Image (spheres, rainbow, N blue to C red):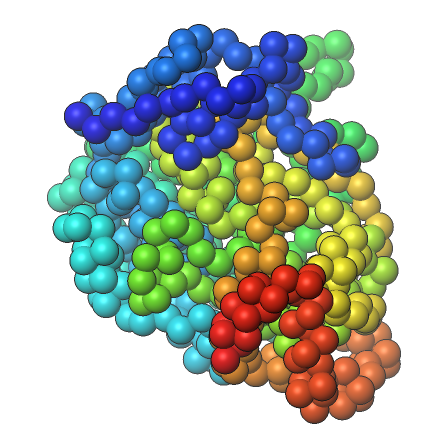
Length: 503
């Protein structure tokens, strides 16, 4: 039986990779407006599905790696940006992991003529290298289209009898879902068919499987709640004074977000009709690239998407800063969004797997976020750190120019979640990823190429500056020294490492 030890360190408990603040009068709440870290009361927490009291000074606890907690897990979409590092993390914990993917994201690279900034090897080589680096841990791969090959999916579940399905197998980019009628239809067909096939196959298989789904904070909409966004459900008073708990109203901002809202309704139906055990994770915008598992070998490296369709806003800013390109902020930059590091994505999914709902319980919903920032403040943070500049451009999206966002994530905090924040991880991303692979960048892919409607497209066209005025490729030789000095902040050793990475 594998064991891990937790040590009390002053006012922090370190357990299974999480540092848990525990003052005597703590409160399980994140103050996102001020960026304060979350704390919980030093009484009890759940690790690997087992509650443990941490009153001793040196406490041994069984984490998800104990023999009794090991599971067989099918990771749908396990070759993707979130799926790949999650599959490695779960494998390292000792779970038996099967990756299922149709490699559609790689085909979209070909369609968009834009590769990941980081070089990605074949899924077969990825799995082989992981076995070498992890001293024999096996990752199995099954080439399967969840949305189109129902019979094969059902046969897989009947044959393998997994304990858990982690469902990433959806087209995940809002801009791509708005690119054209073809892309809108593909996103709906792929995402809704895929989710429904999973749920129907679980029922037909007769296997008791916990479904963990990666959703999005976008199902709530932005600026629509008028207060803190709860975790999935809200208490309401119906006509006649009747009290009820209902799903938070859905306000999707794109076709992609609409498919996640429809997913949520399917989960509610199958939970009530067939008592399926479902956990839906409403995740913020993911940033970062690597995890402790993906850095073991360059062939295990995760994707880094920087194009305007798939590149998340912070990763695009990091890329732009690394090459001396102005940080492009859409509209006023007053949009407030929630963020989470890719390492925390994997860890939170591990926590959700270790803490499944019981049969018959409502769909469990977590807000999987670390902190919130306005986009313009985020751009300033990156620009100040790197010596870059910020440029506001017309917004290709149909959205509010300004919004507030206050989010509850008490459930994950109560399970020991201590997030990586932007203030601690940004420089590593600029140096070790964006700077290192800068020669792979296609600058023509940075500016928006997908628009929410014709009026957005027209406004962007009317306000577009000539590409030569914003393309910094001709200025790179002059900017390199300035960028290096800004990043190194007077540290010559750091500057030397930067030069090595840039080369």
